[in-house]
Length: 227
Image (tube, rainbow, N blue to C red; front, side, top):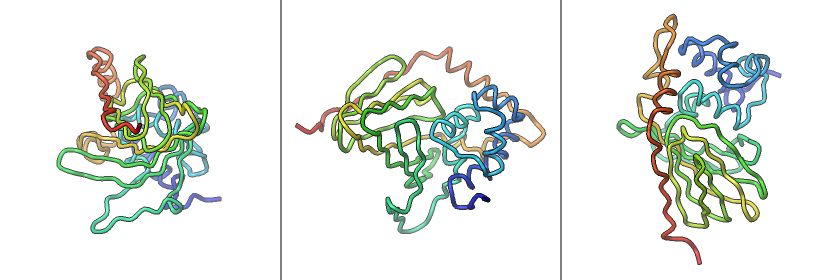
């Protein structure tokens, strides 16, 4: 079955090869860096694969592009309406994500997601591009960032450098939250990509800078926690 252009599978197939080529990476090298099998990557590029949250976020981390550059979420003018039942779900080990909106403002790009952590589940991430913001709407959410752990309830907020290893755990049944991913405009693929025949060293250099950087503090706001 061929991938529908408007589906997550179809959009990823249309953008992955472009992102990989502009980074100067072969499928073998992308496989090595992302820990995703070559056969799986070939299937994703042909539109026959089954992308998960883990796959998409790993590709975002290695290619150093926003999630929406891989899934091709386009900004719209005027009224924007996203019905939950009409938005395709990107599933992971413990999290379901629905992409609601991509916002471009000045030098920043924002992606807004409806995020649900399944009861008893734990979603791990090795890190990816951008800054991550989460606001809990319902349930109790455990968040671990680079070894530091916090617990959030309804109305609580946490923000952190998404390049750090992190995880979400539903502590008491399903957790509903809003996830906001924030990027600099120069991290967007179509703005920062080099010529097709020029390998890009940015991935290795940026990773080295992150290893050498002092870990930023995690921001937690529990001022509006429900009683």
